[in-house]
Image 1 (tube, rainbow, N blue to C red):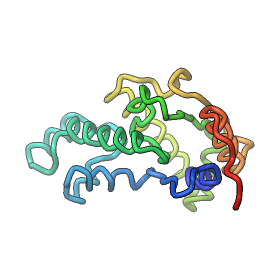
Image 2 (spheres, helix red, strand yellow; image 1 turned 90 degrees about the vertical axis):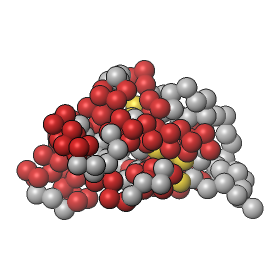
Image 3 (spheres, rainbow, N blue to C red; image 1 turned 180 degrees about the horizontal axis):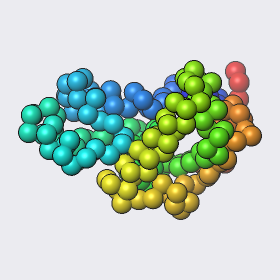
Image 4 (cartoon, rainbow, N blue to C red; image 1 turned 120 degrees about the vertical axis):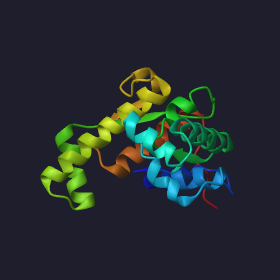
Length: 193
């Protein structure tokens, strides 16, 4: 969906500006910005680790403390958002950028069954595996926001717009978000030349 949104927003962007999506590749940007080894990526899951697992990893010198990695991720997100023309997905980006005036926060929601069905199709998973995947992703995101930012992912006040995607395609959702963002910023579509 984020790439569809970037394409839609690009039609309204000033000449020379390009929208970039940071989703799964956000961790790569964090590693690059903070000169961290690529092997550290495996220690940056969005889900919560047990204190024992984190302590063992820390004692073995496998990575900096998780709080440091979260702080570095927050710094990268902040810097990207300040630069503009980015779509940031996950990692508490909505909390980190809450005070920036140029940021529009969106939450996509949907029923468990519809999300499982989409995961089955996109990742070619069987039903049970898709259900477990959706459950684990939901828990990971909820725990990450709660653990590191003291926030509740379901708090509607953290978002400018919440969209139920059960009966709306990715393309339609991208257009809704893009149009709402444009109106919010008072942007007019760019005239084609």
